[in-house]
Amino acid sequence: MRRNMTKKNNENPWENLEAPTNSSRVSSRRVGEDYPFDFYFAKDSASKYMLVFSLTQPAEIKEKILLNGISVANASAGGTPAITLTLKNNADWPIFSKICLDLCNTASEAKNEEKAVASFCNRLLYWQYFLKRGKEDKLSKEEQIGLAGELLFLEKYILPQYGALDSINFWTGADADVQDFFIGGKRIEVKTCSSPSKNEVHISSLQQLYDAECPIYLAVAYIGAATSSTGGAFSLASIANKITERLRGESTAAYELFVKKLAAVGMFLDGNYADDFYVANKFKGFGVRRDFPKKNPEEVKEGITKARNIIRLGHCRDYEILLEEVCKKD
Image: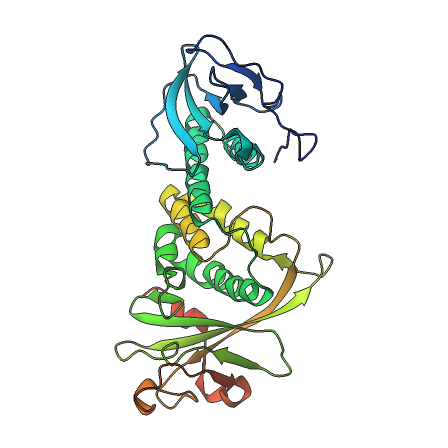
């Protein structure tokens, strides 16, 4: 269960803490009484704002974590092993408070201290990418639907076949590759169709449905706008969190990689995408053979580098294939 111990969003949890006179000590108060682990808002002798995760055993931070404006360290709090976060500029306390509560909530879902430390550090990696990118603008509705299509395809067709880490590695679109997935010598481009009456998809470049070296497949997700009460409705946040929780239980490496890739495409698991709802009706698959109705780069005059295609799927029935067959493990 997620916890949120602040009464108001604008409440500064460090404001009433007095800085200690002893440079080796901190003043602190517990973040919340119902957390299963010991988290403290703290202030050092220089009046710097801190979060202290007090531990029963020393813990190693395996990854090098560099957060803009926040230092992370293994430290001792009053002789007790701890992980500490120290804010460099107290004026940035609103985002620091948000990060602290998110870290406490995430770590508190673990069953023991060792797993809590791992979750805490994994979540720090997420915030590292968030703060490094510095992007707080939401993805557009079009970008949300496009990303939702890729995540639904990942969840439905890839994860059940290949497991956590391989599946996330196969998601190459997040790495700025031309196609969205590269699986066992096959390239798969995922597109969304929001208007079944038009039944068409937009191809944004000559290369998206072209590769001279390996087969290309087109996966079309039919996704429409919905409300929270629509049967089967989901938000981009819910599908991303669903995959995140699955990966967290299967592979720490896959979880970390997925979070990095989400950050790379501009999505952060911060609640910004929980209010826009969609419904996915079905997927269709198409084998993009040479005679598929599209423009091929070698057929376009030299000097033309970009050319958009609108493909009417009603004219592509002869190319339909089962995505289960395309994605199955050999």
